Length: 191
Image (cartoon, rainbow, N blue to C red; front, top):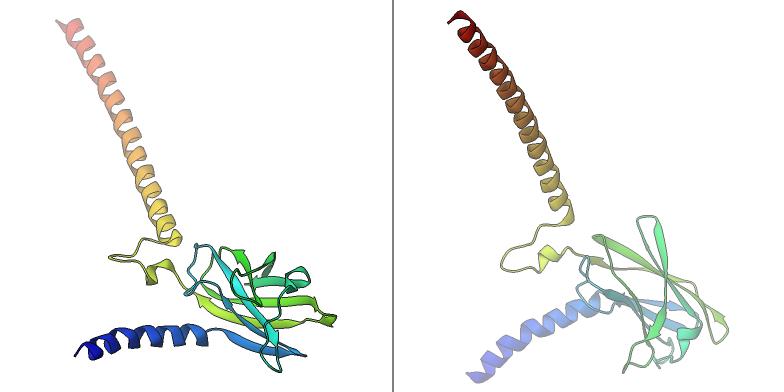
C-alpha cells in the first residue's frame, strides 16, 4: 500500500520534471551543442529569472567550461533587444546564465554569438513562454498592471465627476446665500 502512495506522489513530480526538460531547446552548431531555456521554470512576468544555456561537445556531450568570457547572449522580445552578461551556473559544468526580469507575457528569443575555441557562434532559439503571475497565484490572483491602470482611470473619472458636482453645489449655495441676503434686505426695507 505504501508503495502505491509513494508512486502516486512521485509520478506527478516526474511528469513535471519531464515537462520542464522538454521546454529546453537543443541546437547543434558546428562541434558544439547548445541547450536553451530558463534557469527557473516556469518563467513569470515581473520575477527575476535568467536565460539558461548548456554548452557541450556535440559528438559526446562533454560539458564546455570557461565559455563565459567569449560567449555573447542577447534576448529579444517584440522588436526590442538587450545584451545579457553571461555567467557560469555554479555546480553545473558547461552551464551558463544571463540574468534579467521578463516584463511581458510571451515567447522570448535567445541569440548566442561570439566564439568558443575559435569557432564562431551564431545560435538563435525561442525559449519557453513567459506566463503571468496569475497562473500561480493562490487563493486568488492579484490584479495585473493593466487591470490596476483601468481601475485607476475609472477612479479618476469618478473623482472628476464628484469634483464637478461639488463645484456646482458650492455655486448653487452661493447663489442661494445671495438671494437670501437680497430677500432679507427687501424685508427690512419694507418693514
